[in-house]
Every structure is written in structure tokens, then in C-alpha cells.
Image (cartoon, rainbow over all chains, first blue to last red; front, side):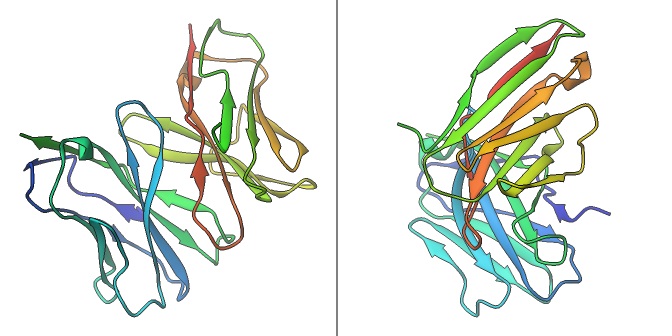
Length: 116
Length: 111
């Protein structure tokens, strides 16, 4: 079974608008972590934001926020005020304590295109 | 200088050749990882190491081997390369709690 599901292969957004990238996860662990990474066309993987399963507040990092809904097992990334430089692949990943702490399982990614 | 450095950045080679991809880090992290990225499949873990004496197989270790030469160095070898090992390879590092930090990747093409 898929541990991390990203159902949106591609998303389009206009510059300065907000966009939500979906991520659902599957785990029986109580302790886990959720991450979002950005991969520009140049190929590098850039860490964006982290949410721990026991964190009561949604994580925020600048224009990035993570909409964490534990009961629904979703961890959507919200990018506010999109910029042209946000065009990239975005990967959701999960770290489960039960499988060996710090092992990440990645989703298949969502390609975001920001238009002027 | 990059915190996590992968060499080479690009490599084209022939089937049956032995290939080594190298990774070094200056972040002082104990934990190092090798991933493979294929289009439509995301990143998949090949091997990981939690310290110099610890090596563990990931989900797709067949056809690969690794060596942790020092805390800062973790190399990935393909003993006899085959075309379906053509992919983008990433090295990553982390401490116990924090996120994984990735190198810029190695594009490997096997003809």
C-alpha cells in the first residue's frame, strides 16, 4: 500500500495567488514526521517544512505552511503569494519511527507551474 | 561550498562497468543515505548508515553496495551496471531529529 499519496501530478497557479498541494499518508505509528521538499528543474532537493505528529499547531516557514489534519491523515502544503521561482516538483515525505527513525518514504510528487 | 557534495555530477557509462558514486558532507551528521529517483516513482531508498559501523539495506538495494569510509564519506557502487540503473542518484545526511539534507544529485546513464 502507498505510504504517501500525492494525487495531483500537476498544478497550475498564477503569480501572487495561493496554491495547495495535497498529500495523504498511511501509518499505524503514533509518532511520525511529515516533510515537504522542493525540486527545481536544476535537480537539487530543497527541504521546505516539517510537521511532527504531536505538534498541535500547523508548521509555517515564510510563505509555506503545512495544513495538518491528523484524523484525515493529510498534510497539505500551502504556498501563499506564489512566485515564478516556485515552479518546481514538490515531494511530500514521511518518517516513521517504527521502521527505523529517519528513514523517509516519498510520494511521487506534484509539478507546480506558476504563470505570470 | 555545498554541505553535501556528490561526485561526479554526471556520468555516462556502458553496461557491465563498475561505477562508484561518492558523497561527502561537512554538516557533521552521523546519518547518511543513498536514494535513487526515477520519473514517476519519487525517491527510493537504496542504503542508509546511522554511523561508520552501521550499514542497512533500503527498499531497492539489489545490484548496489555501499561503503562508509568515515563519518563524512559514504560511497555507492554499482558492481556491474545495467541500463535499468539509469537514474538520478541522491546522497542525503541528517542528525537524529532533523530533516534530511540532500546533495545536488548524480545523473547516471548506462548504455
